[in-house]
Length: 111
Image 1: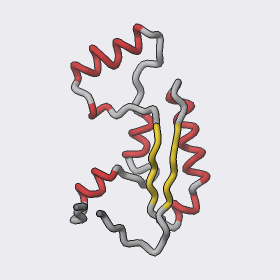
Image 2: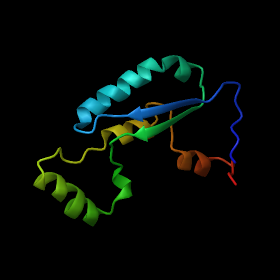
Image 3: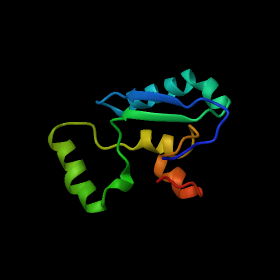
Protein backbone atom coordinates (compact mmCIF):
# COMPACT_ATOMS: atom_id res chain seq x y z
CA UNK A 1 0.00 0.00 0.00
CA UNK A 2 1.24 3.49 -0.81
CA UNK A 3 0.02 6.37 1.32
CA UNK A 4 -0.11 9.92 0.03
CA UNK A 5 -0.16 12.64 2.63
CA UNK A 6 -2.42 15.48 1.59
CA UNK A 7 -5.00 17.83 3.03
CA UNK A 8 -7.11 17.20 -0.10
CA UNK A 9 -9.12 14.25 -1.28
CA UNK A 10 -7.58 12.33 -4.14
CA UNK A 11 -9.27 13.07 -7.44
CA UNK A 12 -9.58 10.06 -9.74
CA UNK A 13 -10.30 10.77 -13.39
CA UNK A 14 -11.03 8.11 -15.99
CA UNK A 15 -9.92 9.52 -19.32
CA UNK A 16 -10.64 8.22 -22.81
CA UNK A 17 -8.94 10.39 -25.42
CA UNK A 18 -9.71 10.30 -29.14
CA UNK A 19 -8.32 7.20 -30.85
CA UNK A 20 -7.76 8.73 -34.30
CA UNK A 21 -5.59 11.85 -34.32
CA UNK A 22 -3.13 13.56 -31.99
CA UNK A 23 -4.43 17.14 -32.50
CA UNK A 24 -7.84 16.07 -31.16
CA UNK A 25 -6.20 14.33 -28.19
CA UNK A 26 -4.20 17.51 -27.48
CA UNK A 27 -7.38 19.60 -27.58
CA UNK A 28 -9.09 17.17 -25.20
CA UNK A 29 -6.11 17.25 -22.84
CA UNK A 30 -6.12 21.07 -22.83
CA UNK A 31 -9.87 21.13 -22.12
CA UNK A 32 -9.41 18.63 -19.31
CA UNK A 33 -6.68 20.75 -17.74
CA UNK A 34 -8.95 23.81 -17.92
CA UNK A 35 -11.89 21.85 -16.45
CA UNK A 36 -9.69 20.64 -13.58
CA UNK A 37 -7.96 24.02 -13.07
CA UNK A 38 -9.24 24.38 -9.47
CA UNK A 39 -7.68 21.03 -8.60
CA UNK A 40 -4.40 22.04 -10.21
CA UNK A 41 -4.47 25.40 -8.39
CA UNK A 42 -4.77 23.87 -4.92
CA UNK A 43 -2.32 21.06 -5.76
CA UNK A 44 -4.88 18.31 -5.15
CA UNK A 45 -3.56 14.79 -5.76
CA UNK A 46 -4.93 13.36 -8.98
CA UNK A 47 -4.91 9.91 -10.50
CA UNK A 48 -5.63 9.74 -14.22
CA UNK A 49 -6.49 6.33 -15.62
CA UNK A 50 -8.05 5.18 -18.84
CA UNK A 51 -6.99 5.04 -22.45
CA UNK A 52 -4.96 8.01 -23.61
CA UNK A 53 -4.53 6.44 -27.05
CA UNK A 54 -1.07 7.99 -26.94
CA UNK A 55 2.43 6.68 -27.53
CA UNK A 56 5.50 7.12 -25.38
CA UNK A 57 8.60 7.06 -27.55
CA UNK A 58 10.83 5.70 -24.77
CA UNK A 59 8.71 2.54 -24.62
CA UNK A 60 10.19 1.36 -27.94
CA UNK A 61 13.63 0.64 -29.33
CA UNK A 62 14.55 2.61 -32.46
CA UNK A 63 14.34 -0.55 -34.52
CA UNK A 64 10.89 -1.54 -33.25
CA UNK A 65 9.60 2.03 -33.62
CA UNK A 66 10.57 2.20 -37.30
CA UNK A 67 9.93 -1.38 -38.38
CA UNK A 68 6.72 -1.92 -36.48
CA UNK A 69 5.02 1.20 -35.13
CA UNK A 70 5.71 3.45 -38.13
CA UNK A 71 5.42 0.66 -40.71
CA UNK A 72 2.04 -0.60 -39.48
CA UNK A 73 0.64 2.92 -39.40
CA UNK A 74 1.85 3.68 -42.92
CA UNK A 75 0.56 0.39 -44.29
CA UNK A 76 -2.90 1.01 -42.79
CA UNK A 77 -3.04 4.71 -43.74
CA UNK A 78 -3.20 5.75 -40.09
CA UNK A 79 -1.75 8.84 -38.54
CA UNK A 80 2.02 8.52 -38.23
CA UNK A 81 3.13 8.05 -34.62
CA UNK A 82 2.94 11.16 -32.45
CA UNK A 83 4.04 11.62 -28.85
CA UNK A 84 2.73 15.11 -28.08
CA UNK A 85 0.13 13.94 -25.55
CA UNK A 86 2.52 11.91 -23.42
CA UNK A 87 5.19 14.58 -23.73
CA UNK A 88 2.74 17.25 -22.54
CA UNK A 89 1.81 15.24 -19.48
CA UNK A 90 5.36 14.13 -18.72
CA UNK A 91 7.02 17.51 -19.30
CA UNK A 92 5.09 18.88 -16.34
CA UNK A 93 2.93 21.18 -18.42
CA UNK A 94 0.15 19.59 -16.40
CA UNK A 95 2.18 19.17 -13.22
CA UNK A 96 1.51 15.43 -13.35
CA UNK A 97 3.90 12.52 -13.39
CA UNK A 98 3.56 8.79 -13.72
CA UNK A 99 3.40 6.68 -10.58
CA UNK A 100 6.75 5.22 -11.58
CA UNK A 101 8.33 8.68 -11.90
CA UNK A 102 6.81 9.77 -8.57
CA UNK A 103 8.13 6.77 -6.67
CA UNK A 104 11.52 6.93 -8.40
CA UNK A 105 12.00 10.60 -7.43
CA UNK A 106 10.98 10.30 -3.77
CA UNK A 107 11.76 8.14 -0.82
CA UNK A 108 8.19 6.78 -0.84
CA UNK A 109 7.94 3.05 -1.00
CA UNK A 110 4.91 0.93 -1.83
CA UNK A 111 4.72 -2.59 -0.46
